[in-house]
Image (cartoon, rainbow, N blue to C red; front, side, top):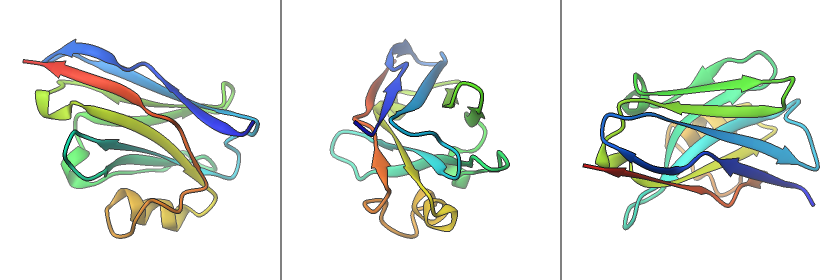
Length: 131
């Protein structure tokens, strides 16, 4: 079965850090752009960051820069989201998604277009930040 699998979520105190992982099952990330999105209770989904698997270029909304860092390990076929200095408002389900269209992925991450059309989605991992 072709899918994305996220891991690394959990409960952390404000000011702490977490690293999320996203790995594909049934395919490789070669030729894909991979993005992290999040959705907090009662709020719309928002983009966090994305990475181009071909050259490692990263993109993120200004609101996410500074505390969230996306990276990839091609040998492990895994993409990571390092989250530092977490705040209670970062509490959300974090989703990994992949698409072959980098432009589309960037536009989705920046909120210019819906991300509903991404090729693959994971089921999400819950991050809870306590105050």
